[in-house]
Image (cartoon, rainbow, N blue to C red; front, side, top):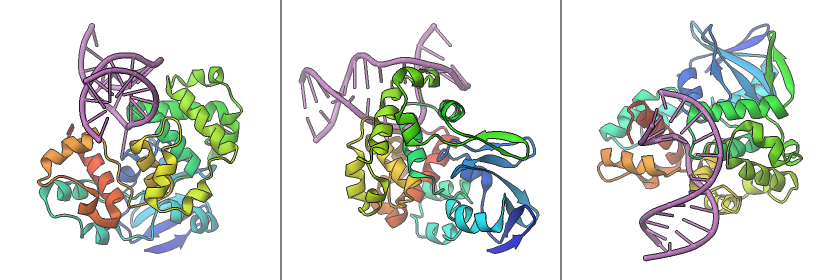
Amino acid sequence: MHIIEHKDHVEIVGTDMSLEHTFECGQCFRFFRQPDGAYAGVAFDRPVRLWYTPDGFAVSGSREDFDNIWKKYLDLELDYAALSADFPRDDFTQSAIAYGRGLRILSQQPWEALCSFIISQCNNIVRIQGIVRTLCRLFGEETELMGEIFYTFPTAERIASLSLDELAPLRAGYRDAYILSAARRVASGEFCFSALERLDTPAARRELLSLEGVGSKVADCFLLFGMHRLDAFPIDTWMKKAAAYYPGGLSAESFGKYAGIAQQYIFYYAKSQKIG
DNA sequence: TGCCAGGCCGAAA
DNA sequence: TTTCGGCATGGC
């Protein structure tokens, strides 16, 4: 990986980064493909654009922002091709890896990931994106990039100050109460992300299950996408169905300490094949 | 129109 | 311990 600094963006060459696989694999709900082919969204309260260049891809903003924020957010220092070489050799897993080539697990902010995956339960991705978009537009802060208006993800404190009636415009249904409950526990300091960082993944998962509206699936998605616990392994109904295609069944042990990355390849592939 | 969606909760078996 | 109905909403 080689970095080239430009006036208003940074170019990264020598990676297998796939913007579409990374931003369209269902791990985040805030980035959208633009008419010019770039991906634009907001993370860490900053609007950002990413696009392909002849030799790699580019990220808007300064070299300092790239070094401090985007390099880690995009998980650019982990060699996904090398680690996925150790995954099982069955056709199903290998097809999933090939399909999702260049996919990277983002390091999203914990509160945004938790809130987003509470919203995700029993919901489809297009509608999740819509609810999150409304949440940010109504309660986030306005920001701007290249003349386009974006909104930051609202803080837990901001949401904790709201009522259920004020959340009703989200049209999130029964998830309103879960969002509000989680926001209040986070904002009060009773539920602390930095304390969670000090726990191993199973212990952190147990803590997460104490949140209203957080079960095993939401907990694992949060651990993977909000805390970058690459061993977290969301198991749900489609995964059990997908296991029918994998002799011997799918399990965390099959993929070692990168089970979370593997499950994301498989999730993305299974959706494309309409498995389940 | 009906099925389904990155589920969770509480009750019943 | 597993199973099951209910929950809000809207994409397809």
